[in-house]
Length: 126
Image (cartoon, rainbow, N blue to C red):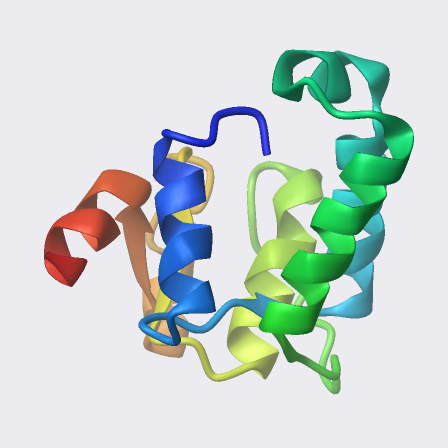
C-alpha cells in the first residue's frame, strides 16, 4: 500500500494474477485493517481512509481464507509474528514471505515452510 512500485506491491500483483496465493486468517485481516488505517501509512500512500479500506478489502478478496484450527503459540521471539506463523501453518503454506526473516528463525522449517524475503519471491516469479 505504501509503495506501488515496491516489493510488496509486486507480490500483490502476482496474487492478482494468480501466480502466488495470499493466506489470511481473521487475526491477520484485523491487523491489516488496523495498520492500513493508520494515518502514518495512509499519508505515505496518499490514500484517504476510504481508499485504504478499499485496498484492504481488495486484498482480502484476493486471499485464501485460513481457518485457524490449531494455535501454535508460543513459537517465535516476537509475539506479534505468531499470527503470521499460525496462518502459514494452518493454511498449509509452502513459504512465509517477510521483510524480517530473523524473527522467524528456523521455526517455520519444522512445519515444512520456507521463509523467504520478498525479493527472493520476486526473483522466483521472473
